[in-house]
Length: 229
Image 1: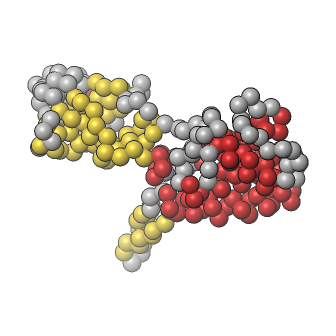
Image 2: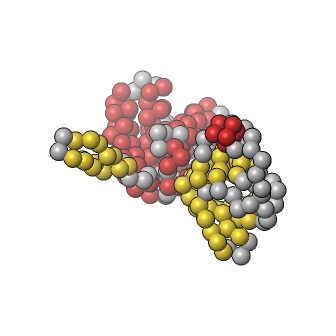
Image 3: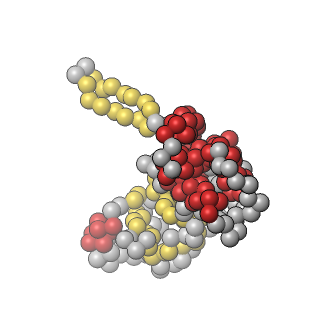
């Protein structure tokens, strides 16, 4: 569903006694309210505890060039965060690819950036508070920096905008919007209905679109492993 269709469905499910909009441009009144209910739900789902782990927010196998003698680089456009476990550097012809070890900024700042070392194949990477990416040592020639990234929050603005959440889970936005409507109008029965519809879809979204979490805990008789999300 696109943005307009999401708003239309939410208004229908909420039982609003008003003609459904044919566009969201210049929306006023209850249509503007539902436009906000959908966008607020969408923004909140992207910002949950899973936030940067959602599969639908991943942008895989990205690259940018490293320049000889330059150790600082801007965060790539549209990328909010880098999965530092995936970072590698390779020579231009994609040979001699090696992983870079992520280090805390202050370890880099006080333990590496203060040292005089020759430019060579980078071994470490860090992220400064201003989102500058630093590699150490500085490269001695042109290399390619390879990574998996997390895209910035997506926003719904125009009628035809489609959420990055997989289509089969779009109803989570519809029922999330209905829930917000019910809360603002203190409609307990509609709120209960919306929550009962929303929760199973959201739980399935979490199960299918977030990585499994492996928990290892100490145990009197050895190691106990738990798997879950």
